[in-house]
Image 1 (tube, rainbow, N blue to C red):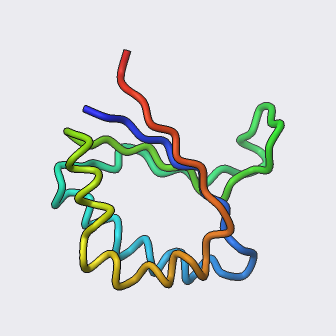
Image 2 (image 1 turned 135 degrees about the vertical axis):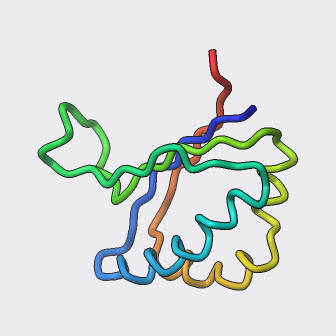
Length: 100
């Protein structure tokens, strides 16, 4: 099992395009033995301390294997809509780990 944390920064004004991409890509996760376990949209009121910009969203995901995650990234349907991701996401940070 692999665990992923994705910290996502969206271009201002491109939130709806980001949501459109998410509406397509999130359901595809389950095709590859993956689960979106938590999706957070933090606000300034929910941040206790920060030394980075507050992201638009934070996702926690898990996949049964690295191969499952790699196959998700190669999914043909998802790849057709990567232009939405590129248009809406300024930057993202992907942290991969294992459960201790």
